[in-house]
Length: 209
Ligand SMILES: [Zn+2]
Image 1 (cartoon, rainbow, N blue to C red):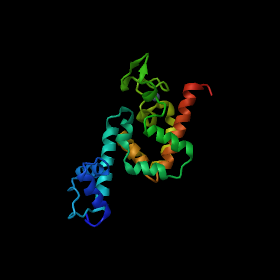
Image 2: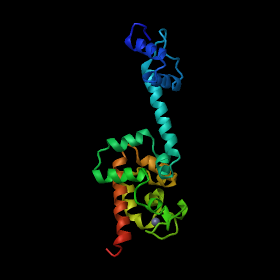
Image 3: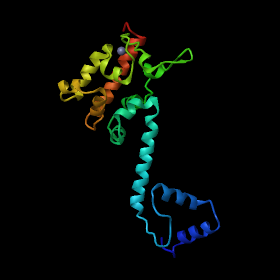
Image 4: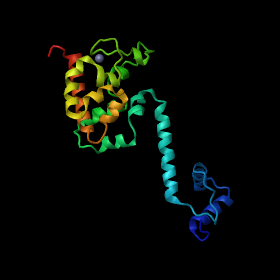
């Protein structure tokens, strides 16, 4: 830090007065990034520091997300790029919104709405699907890939956005979602989420239609 520069003079002045203003912030930043404290001989690489700070923030974000049960699916299937794909894709508002809700664990599936019954917490595996009544939990993966009542809508979506259905069917559910979140697939995935959602609602609330 150049000793003729005003920030350095302010830093030294505040340090000499035992100040707790921005000097504390500078110390926190240099500590967290394992940089030496400011002195007249130090020249910081600010671009590298910005990258390091951003990485720390991203790591902290994923650490926090990992301990939130609601975000189980999100943590398993998404990364920064797939979130970007969803934001950037040329999609209509509703499929984009439903896809975002699905990934964030707030689409009103039983895994979300069935968390409590009569004030008691219900374990994830007992939040049964009321669409197919198969005794299986209605998780995001069940909704997307397994629920029998949504088979027709799902098959149509596969034909539209899955290149090799044989291979697709044998990969893990989380890999299937990652595959469908690719930039060239995500629009079709959004349509699939929307069509399944409409069919699900029809099964639950208007089964005779
Ligand atoms: Zn089901």
